Image 1 (spheres, helix red, strand yellow):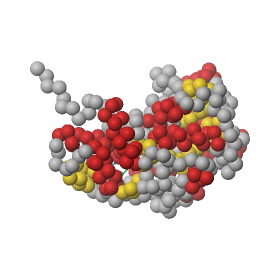
Image 2 (cartoon, protein in one colour; image 1 turned 180 degrees about the vertical axis):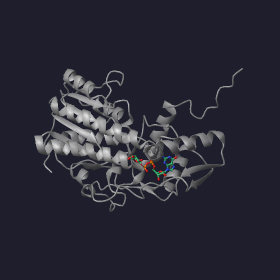
Image 3 (cartoon, protein in one colour; image 1 turned 180 degrees about the horizontal axis):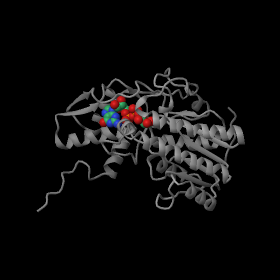
Image 4 (spheres, protein in one colour; image 1 turned 30 degrees about the vertical axis):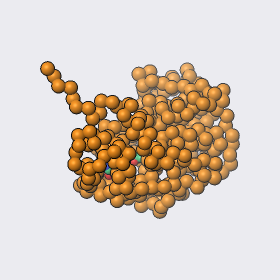
Amino acid sequence: MAATPFELAGRRVFVAGHRGMVGSALVRRLSGERCQVLVAPRAELDLLDRHAVDAWFDRARPDAVFLAAAKVGGILANSSYPYEFIHENLAIALNVIDAAHRFGVAKLLFLGSSCIYPKLAPQPITEESLLTGPLEPTNEPYAIAKIAGLKLVESLRRGHGSDFISVMPTNLYGPGDNYDPEASHVVAALIRRFHEAKLRNDPQVVVWGTGTPRREFLHVDDLADASVHLMKVYSGACALNIGTGEDVTIAEFARQVAATVGYRGRIVFDAEKPDGTPRKLLDVSKLAALGWRARIALPEGLRLAYASFRAEHPEIGRAPAVRA
Ligand code: GFB
């Protein structure tokens, strides 16, 4: 794994998906890099429209691209809208990666996801597990789109010598998360649910599934830091895992969220709801060998996430206004 230094200072750096949780964390992190950060509001640039993407790249001429734009959602959203998840993620990956190639971008970092690994991959999951077994059915369309993105990057590197790289983040959380109960991932879902239950003095909170699946959670500011680090030091065909190297059961995680929020009632599990993949702990030894490790431990990360949830959504949990 050769390390080819790539300077960000003085470059024009496009963050695709800057309004999302990952993209906004990248914009925050890049503000300390002495580069010019380029963003494109959705009203100006629809990443699903190939011609619009081409025209934007022709005009803006970025030197580097972080491809953080994606249609994302939790286990329920993924299983309810499979076409939207595969179609939008394929289109975004194809349009942006291809435009970056044709308009001379020097370096691109594509964000995949840990759900691209086989459902029953040996744990912790090494990068070599990719495409060695069947995927988790609840998010297979999304995972296939992300694998296609990875293969676009890998093929450009092999066939055209492009210095494009991919990374595979584990489950993420932090500022800018989506708190919609139907579409959210588990961290945002439980922060909101325990918060509302505390305000209403509910005797119990329902957590989906059996509570036995294990998940690894990475604060999005750590992901942004790792991505910027890899953009600078990594240049290889292998899509690198980004995680903390530690996981918890959903039951234990729910107790931690309850403690963070200050909810003292009971926690019950609804086994009718899907568990998803039993475990997806990433092996982060390649990342560690490149000099990066996560800094925000889960208890601290949850405290930060609860604070940002309250700051971003003061309306959630308040009683609706009574009309006179
Ligand atoms: O975060 P989550 O939706 O994503 O669910 P996945 C993680 C685990 O938390 C599952 C449980 O076992 C859920 O059953 N869970 C418990 C809940 N309560 C809740 C709740 O209220 N809401 C949610 N959402 N989950 C996603 C993929 O899988 O992982 C995406 O669907 C993406 O494609 C993402 O890759 C990283 O970890 O199961």
